[in-house]
Image (cartoon, rainbow, N blue to C red; front, side, top):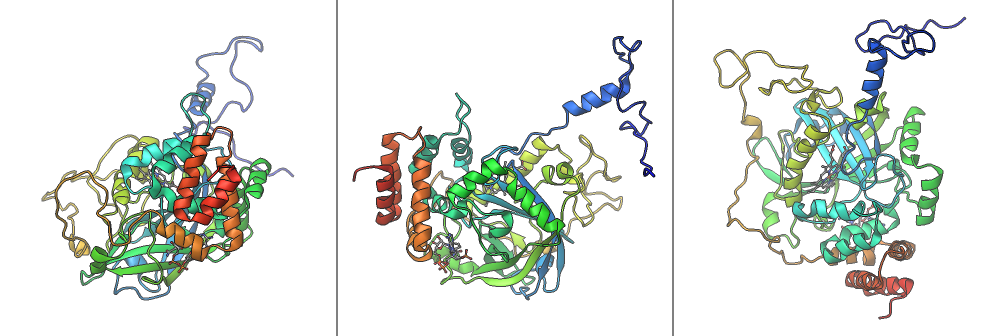
Length: 484
Ligand code: NDP
Ligand code: HEM
């Protein structure tokens, strides 16, 4: 017996006349403008796409839950971080430079974007799988991304252009070091760490302030692909990571991450040996050890990729009471960039879509605009005497701090040990194993051996890596055939 299925309708719910035939004058005749059903189908199809994200276009994601197991109320009053609290979340993973259909296993950082649906509104932590970034000033972001994407003339990616940017911006050395180890090609999204990367502010109910960094440690263990394995997978299954996550969750094999934080007392920042707000630096563990405060698990796949993942809108400006911004210039730039991107990519009422809508009630005075459907009633202005919502500044007590200075365009004022190379050197000298180092040299040589990379550029590549460590520079010089 065949199962009863519903009748097709158009998008207005009107029964559809046919799934197969347009309306014509006689079986062989021309079609009719009155066939609204055909016109709706064709017109809607032409509008199926929204612009892909300008970066991090290719990705995938899933829902899960955060559980806080330790008491950190002495550091933050944020409700989601109180001991015993469980908070629903969405996590989207991505590559950075490739387009919507690009391969998951390309050498690239991976996006690690979290949205927590807290009782105080959405808290978004839009991080990567590395604790650092290529640049420390947002004015360079679009130039950096252009160098990673495609040339204007032939629309090809170009490794010469990439090394040109990196070698002219030595602050990139730490992030490019991570990228050129096998962590630049993770085995799957489940097998990599995530990081908030920036320094954020935490403040407690008494108004005491701390600086914080987030580390999400995979409980599946870090696993990577070699360059050859990653290349082979690009051909075999460009959607390997999307498939892996979907299948694991469907089978009930729910991936999880430990939530760790590093806490710096507010006053330490001024004289710390590194600028603690410089996104090209980590806080060494011997200064600020990681403490575990909980874990999160991914346990549910989306039902509709477009609605729930493509239209998901993550924004570093979504911070809830107990959490604040830091003076990291990159973070400051991102606070503007993401909501602006969402208004363009999705539309002004993107926060009304189910995936972006907070779990807590919204009592905003913003009104109307394209596609508004959760639209507040009267009163439409504040202040008012009509019983409308009234702002409560109390949860933000403690979030402010003193700043003063001349208006300038300048690099950060250096701290005692600030330079571009000592932290990547520490990675090479004390963290990487012999086989990690060999892999890093071979990955750099492979990348800088692309036919478009000029001899002059190869010399600059060797110089860049020699600044990190002479052994690394020597290995790259040998591999590229550059004479010392
Ligand atoms: P530690 O020895 O205390 O920490 C080293 C860190 O490196 C650990 O977090 C380790 O965690 C991670 N790590 C291990 N293998 C690799 C790898 N192949 N690629 C990238 N990271 C790796 O040293 P410090 O805190 O003094 O930091 C030394 C250097 O380690 C830093 O300059 C930085 O390059 C790197 N690092 C530091 C981090 C930090 O927050 N302090 C975080 C990540 C890296 P795990 O094996 O779990 O990834
Ligand atoms: C996505 C801008 C730095 C992580 C994006 C998007 C923009 C953007 C415009 C697309 C948003 C969308 O259409 O939904 C910038 C700017 C930066 C910057 C201007 C620096 C000034 C960073 C850094 C990180 C990061 C430092 C990580 C630490 C991400 C992630 C996404 C993303 C994970 C994808 C989010 C998702 O899954 O939807 N960025 N970015 N970005 N960015 Fe950045």
